[in-house]
Amino acid sequence: MTARNAEYPLRLRLARIAHVIRRIIGAPDYERYLAHQRRCHVNEQPLSREAFAKDALARRYNQPGNRCC
Image 1 (cartoon, rainbow, N blue to C red):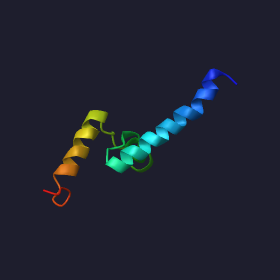
Image 2: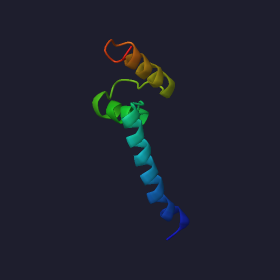
Image 3: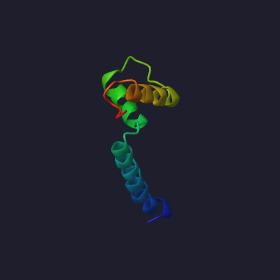
Image 4: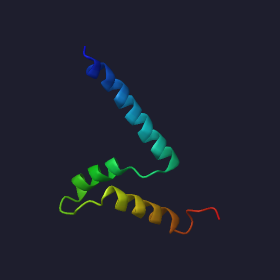
């Protein structure tokens, strides 16, 4: 087994852990968004990572009921 093959499961595990943490804290998941775009909105141009992050923040903080104060 090469070093690269031995490293892969660790990378995969770390990616999964990062995904779970992002889901718990409500951080937007750009990779999941891109997969959804490819599956459901084939003819639409996906947002850039920066535009996606801005849109996610706007949706999170501009909807009444999403904040406690």
